[in-house]
Amino acid sequence: MHRNYQSLSRELPEQLSLMSNNISILQANAIELLKQLIATPSFSKEEDNSAELIRNFLEKQKVKTEQNLYNVWAKNKFFDANKPTILLNSHHDTVKPNKGYTLDPFLAIEKDGKLFGLGSNDAGGSLVSLIAVFLYFYNKETLKYNFILAATAEEEISGHNGIEALLPQLGKIDFAIVGEPTQMQMAVAEKGLMVLDCISTGRAGHAAREEGDNAVYKAMKDINWFSSYRFDKVSDLLGPNKMSVTVIETDNKAHNVVPAQCKFVVDCRVNELYTFEEMLDIIKSNVQCEVKPRSTRLRSSSIATDHPLVVAGTTLGMISYGSPTTSDKALMNFPSLKIGPGDSARSHTADEYIYTDEIKKGIELYIQLLNQLV
Figure (tube, rainbow, N blue to C red):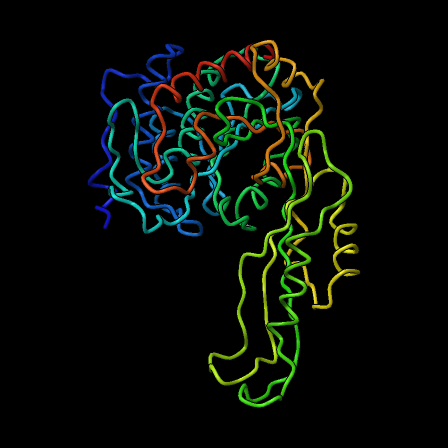
């Protein structure tokens, strides 16, 4: 369906010097880079070509880059180990295009102010905007903070080879901006994500006779509990916990056999008022099925509303809110603010797009935000 990404990649116009504090030039180049990234398939665990594209883009501007797995990172020119460090992070992997696409997901189409293409909104717009911001500050000698840029992999699958693998390589980080589509509002908190594998066990038998113990019926009782139970504590920022049964299957495909086992998956979004362990205890005390969490890594996270980064955003008129979705922010053990151009409602949709003006404005707002600190 897609063309070879190398044939679609274009050289940046010769007259556009990326090493410029001219914001309009940085904006133009960010949009051009995003077009190249759209033309470069980069599904999670298959980000080799997009990592190479990002490295080449930066190295042509004399930025020394490093790579860990498919994670690309760089420090500002006058990095000083005695100064605190700000991480600018977004991801370059994408989900696979869904069947509803009417446009080629790997062909960057610009129309009516929109740039269409897979990953344009999630999170290509944020990524190229943060790259532009990094270049804006790259050559400045008198900054109060260092900058590290990290374009990371496997965010869409919460993989272990993305930001989690890279962070130990970066040294001490004081706080971070995590680029995701938030309409340039401040996601100061995120719900945690815990995925549960549940198994209801019965006894096989012939469907025509009164035999067996139907595992589906047992599962249905527990699924009904998951759909109807309401946790007591509701967060002012993140609202209530949410549980959604998303997958169900039995151990046989025959129509005439009572299934002995029924497996189902529960997606749990957890606010900051509950630990995963507390939520698990409540679940296990109310259901009959076997419950096993796949992972407890992606916990709820938040940044203090009086953090200088949040205060700086507030002075610019940015709104603070709690996000129901999970990002690489969940894997950071330091304060981080999720903010970026684009709209989360467009993520993973058919014919995904971002407005080019959103990218331009995003770059301006990122720079205004950071200029109050550095």
